[in-house]
Image 1 (cartoon, rainbow, N blue to C red):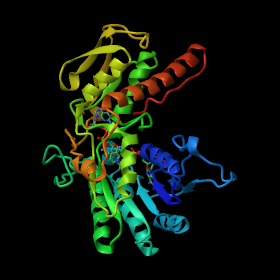
Image 2: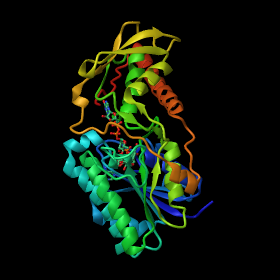
Image 3: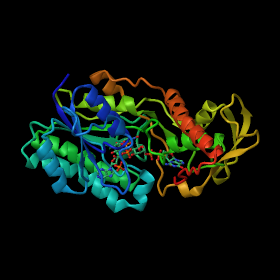
Image 4: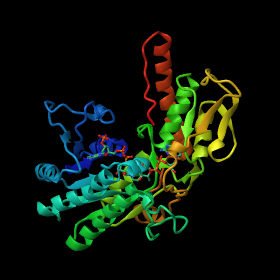
Length: 374
Ligand code: NDP
Ligand code: GDR
């Protein structure tokens, strides 16, 4: 057990919630920054919430925003963290084309604001800093598989902003001797993944369709290839990176890739539904060819349940990403424990349970609305 203090930006997100759990298990006092929202946004951490009136609470939430440097400086001054995990971001690649300036402010300048706060407060030798860097930096890939030395070629405002954050982290390490490092993480998912990222969109929509709550899943580029891992494995590595003697940057990936189409096929199979894909480009569809078990009672053979909507194409696409995690394995002994198939099964099971509950409520006359925003 440790008596260290950690500060997590983005604690209400997928990774932030798993990391907070992990650090609490290790005995850390954990502080997280949450944004003010007009409705509750702490669903992913509600189960670890501790009332401030409890005896010796270990988990604290602070209102804040990565666009507000005085707020960040004050929180860091009050908390005096041993470790800062900068996971907060406008993290959606497609949305970054719609909101490029905001994305730059939060994802690029946000990292700088924290590093400057640490320096300004004279905490350079105490506070270790983790930056949530991304495989999106590789964008138009220059080498397969991608490793720490592969040149970057970002393909979205999100990736360009994250490239600034990557280099400013390296720069503060080199300039001020700060323990600051980048985890270059490839895509990682879980039942807590945001509903508009493609894996969760797929597991959620197919589960809803299997229960008659939705008719069809509309996707963009189904040819895209990604190296998908499980968020639980990846937050473990975030913590490991801050426990070394010397700060360094690491690629975190599984070393295997599959297409979006294959993820659709795997998810459908989990529901007992076999699909046939036909047509090309915008005309591509997936048709039900067989149903086994009783998880997809609302479906029949011949139903078309997946179509392409070019609305989801991006102005510049990242077609393929495949990581080489050799350095993380050799230097830190990190290996991912959960396969993409196991992760997909867990996500489908989670979303199917939810869909079944909704369907049951609906069948009993309750007014159930599910968000179709995607
Ligand atoms: P999520 O989108 O699930 O979480 C993002 C978090 O950032 C949320 O807590 C969100 O708050 C918060 N946030 C957004 N804008 C601001 C802001 N202006 N100020 C403060 N906080 C803000 O992302 P993930 O958990 O999946 O990813 C964590 C980090 O890792 C991100 O930086 C992402 O870019 C990066 N990354 C993710 C990968 C992945 O595959 N998941 C791969 C590589 C990198 P709220 O809940 O209120 O929206
Ligand atoms: P990505 O994840 O852009 O890799 O960024 P996302 O799941 O959004 O897209 C993966 C691939 O799927 C294609 N795609 C679709 N994507 C979405 N969201 N919706 C669709 O309908 C759809 N159809 C096809 C995309 O074009 C893309 O090729 C994620 C985020 O978590 C980033 O924060 C992180 O840095 C990277 O992973 C690594």
